[in-house]
Image 1 (spheres, rainbow, N blue to C red):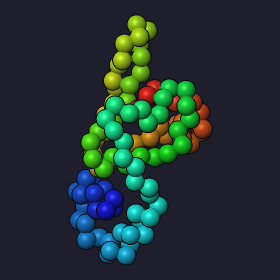
Image 2: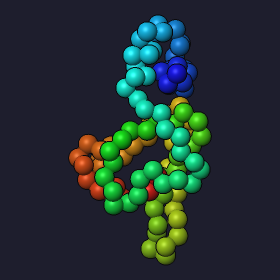
Image 3: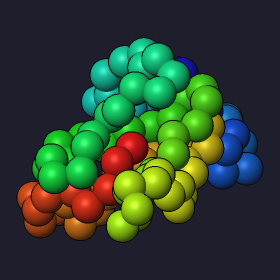
Length: 97
């Protein structure tokens, strides 16, 4: 369950919520499976989702002036990921995930 994974990642007891509450929390999320090296969002697009990394990692990157990929951030397993600015203000994304 998503809530259990989230609580473990934050070093909280998984017994804070009962099974019914955990299911209620989980119903607000849709699980999607993403293959390695798949672009979730490209530079210039508008963020429409918040992602929870259940397994694996996400990397944030952009192309520098030489056209080389520059990785500047990772989101590890058990964390949420999104561009708050793009998501909240509905502005274009300035990097790739």
